Length: 438
Image (tube, rainbow, N blue to C red; front, top):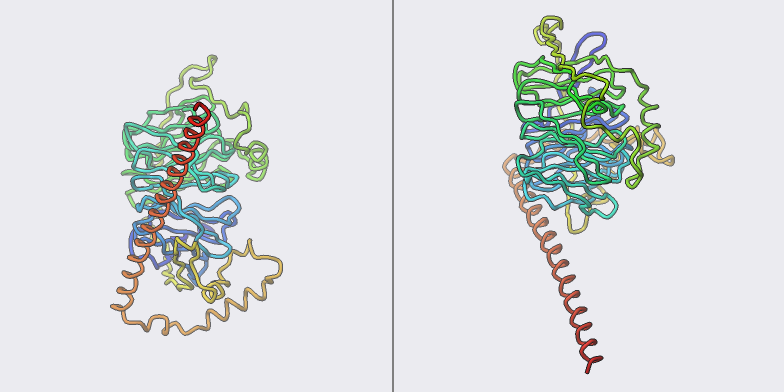
């Protein structure tokens, strides 16, 4: 659902996924919208009335999260097939997979500089990946519960995890140390969001509440009771003056903060000065674990908006159904790393992210490609019998499973070869030493 709040609440319903939608995110410029679903696909939408979308098929199980890099060039997807996949948005092409988790991957997020990815899984680990060499560079484990959600702070030096064991944990990834540990919820924590300043963190929980944490003082400052059931999602706006939450009560609540208003671009400029992975801790990155000594321990402020906020759910806002026009389906063959033949790449050319189009591709050329695509007969795309389509999709799924199996076998074979090489080198060293002694 795409909502327009001005001048009057109105919604556009994008239809295309065949099962529950688990995650959505706008690209940094807002000209693309990515969605993940339990139908094992990821869709990339152009958020307008035409409802054009591109479908990515690579995962072999439900997809749990989507996340754009800060420059909008890459998309990371996390799935219950225990993998994280990274896609190139410029070419609409699959790039690579990350395999190290041993259970469902619930969430994967890029760092602000795009050099790292953090992921969390039901195997009770939070892993950090280097996007350059595609290796896992760090792993945090928990013996009690697993993380439902994880994200970087705005300057990329810390990660916060929302735990199924009712806890929120903040780790410093430069010194691999747990900085803060909050036990403020009475139910599993499903989602969290950093304020752009990095000083506040908001959490959503199955106990039906939202909590706002002051990270500088290390304490809970607000408890928000607006939902009548578990809260599954929460997110600050770019500038931090608003945040929104969604829950099992089928409502989306929009909240206004009373924090200091910050210019988003100024915040980004300030944080860019200390994005380097190995940079020393900045004064603002070191959070005390207890409140300041000159401040007393303040009680949390509870806010219940039910009596003050107009319920737009009862006013029945107009909803426009927008059927998806499937521009192209992007699939992957992991052994080669390519996902589309050249012809399909040309077909998907109109769907390139406008912010990433090179200078030699003029807007007129892009418009022409769009018009050429829209002239294709829609009926011809649907003329294949449904049974044949289902059979082909099943075959493709089986091929994807086989491809992943071959990829894993190749990785294991490479590891075996490396170990054998080490053994031979050690044997040669021992033989040389024995010769010298004799």
